[in-house]
Length: 292
Image 1 (cartoon, one colour):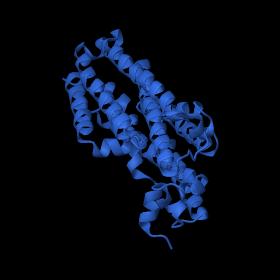
Image 2 (tube, rainbow, N blue to C red):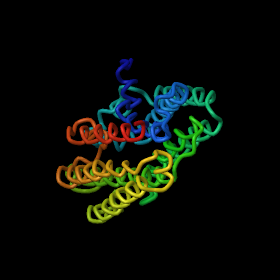
Image 3 (cartoon, rainbow, N blue to C red):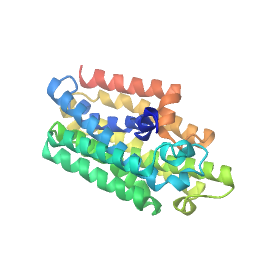
Image 4 (tube, one colour):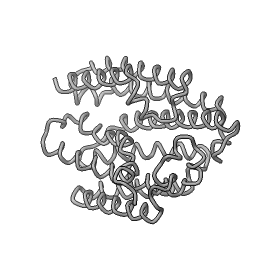
């Protein structure tokens, strides 16, 4: 009989930090301190946490054999045998139904986005993650759906600039993750274990990282001075937050290229103090400028 902790670990709550992208439209539409939009965004966040956890459980079931050969992933509840496959399927179903139930009472378009997210991520876990390049864009699509869902749930128009920034950011994180997996895989066995990783090389990934990092920096800088941005916020001062974005990019590149920490972005956000401080300063500066 598995303990409660095993079922909680199946949800991967540490990964819920990714779902904070749902709040981006709330913050940048100047509705953060409005009770109704905030509550709706919070419900949207909860729905994405549950639906993403539902997919994580299925992914652990699909990858159980490969996870057993991984030094860290072998401790996951499914791979370690602490939770049976049938129990995992039931748990995933409960999470899916609960997420849909929450989304059902929110705007119709949000429900559609939640279901679409599940379908795409399910196909990713099943087969798409083994298709080179496409796997990166599927990861990016998950982040963009969170942002779009965040806009739909509070009924605001999401800026195309935010979508563009999110795309480059998510691709950057996805490529860094692949690099970390590739390096770790070679360190463990001297060869690459996962099929899709055999299609990548560290040199190629480094080039793609630089492209996505550049795209992220430029798109964010252009967003801060775009005509619509200046009109909405009534100031051009948002451009000063670009310094935090650039520092964040450089710091992340340093950790990935020199410290080989890119396999799990959540670990960097949780354990790297300079990154945490920089992210906090960026957020607080944005709040001061947008809500002054």
